[in-house]
Amino acid sequence: MTGSRVVALGHYQPAKVLTNDDLAAMVDTSDEWITSRVGIKTRHVGGPEEPVDEMAAHAGAKALATAGLAPSDIDLVLVATSTAIDRSPSMAARVAARLGMGSPAVMDINVVCSGFTHALATADHAIRAGAATRALVIGADKMADIADWTDRSTCVLLGDGAGAAVVTADPAAPDTPDGPGIGPVLWGSVPEMGNAVRIEGTPPRFAQEGQSVYRWATTQLPPIARRVCEKAGIAPEDLGAVVLHQANLRIIEPVARKIGAVNAVIARDVVDSGNTSAASIPMALSKLVERGEIASGAPVLLFGFGGNLSYAGQVIRCP
Image (tube, rainbow, N blue to C red):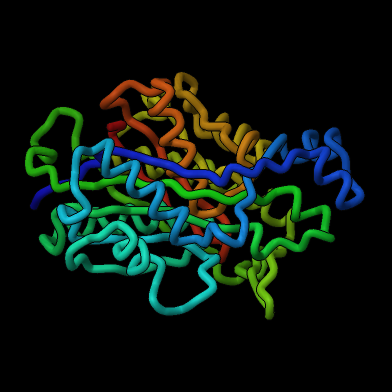
């Protein structure tokens, strides 16, 4: 059975930046209040002319260019998103059309904040099973479209963006000393607490039980993340980087500490980008790689969590 590997990354964010001071002019909040509670300073917000599929296509095109591949080389497109307005065509189908692809399999995956790591595992499984050879995996969300801009407890969190990864078959992966380029996934959920994060209504609006999510994330997720490392055969102290879902700096820092990744670079893109849901992990990883902060081949823990109180994680080798 062949393995798979992430060979290139890309990301995209809208040009418009919304600062904490901008939000303070809209709702009863302040830079100090936002920074002290969630660690966010700015977020990018797309306009009507920047739908989810356009952001996704920009990120995907960048990843393909970095990989040196043509759109026609891709035979599977997966887009993780929970903010697609239309049900059909899917965002994946629209991305394929925007990029001028041939005849790839296309599907959207909606697992909200852990959507990208679910999609990455799905691409890995498809390649291992021989159903695909090169996949474009994208996380893209336009959270501004579902924000309640009158609710200071949630609107301060949200931002827009997209991140993409090119995943290819790696026949040598099982026999390499470092193991597979994408390690085994550990995924699951807490169905009885699914309502703690919601995107509901017409028009749809984002809402959450912030304290419940915080307690779950900081107490229940660290041992699960350590099990992800165990499945990959990697000790937490040997990780080169940890890229958690960029939900809240007050969640990211304690969870990373409890995992025991004492030598790892910790992604903190939430400070500049806010919570971009499924886009947050690939976007943060793409930026770290672009800045040269992770060595090629280093083991990186990716761990998504959130909506549905679902989670998914795997250790990958940095492209």
